[in-house]
Image (cartoon, rainbow, N blue to C red; front, top):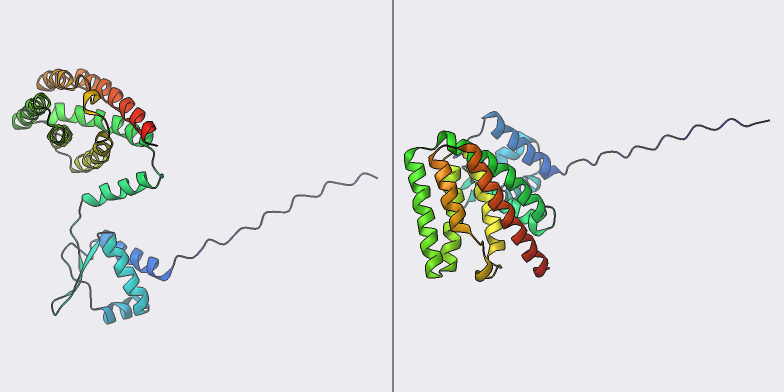
Length: 247
């Protein structure tokens, strides 16, 4: 007599771990920010009152406030007029988070450069569409300043001018989120550039910049994007080779 195959036993589902008390408090405060009940500059209620409102222990509340301070959401001030105050948004926090993720290995250089190519393509197209004459003139001055720093062999000032070029280009989009993203990614990649020897750093940079500028002046988004993409691909290959030597 043939035995019927027994149905496989369903796998036991592990219960989802409950968030810790201070994490729940952080989330509740963040929800108040998202809903507009709390705004930058607002002072949170005193510790005892806030603990009663949230129905949590004061120890858990203190841990939550410290966590929110580290995240840049609030600032804790001491003294008679002290307390917990909601911070204005600081774009530098985005840069710090991305830097930490790169250093901890959660984001690779490849991830970063791939994202940069996609973001810069959109930045260039918007800049060609929205840049004012003043925006374009500022970019032109930056290119000539970069050329002068290259001629004089001032490596640090040259790197600063290179980073400033991307900031000015992002400003020309008149989109704050793109500006924050470009600033964050550029800041991290400039750190890699500091390890590249001066004699091989960014070959053909000034010629590329001047070609790009002509396309930007002409509002030729397709040509400007193509020029930027070709340059960034060369730069990213250089960064990747340098990274391999460092590890």
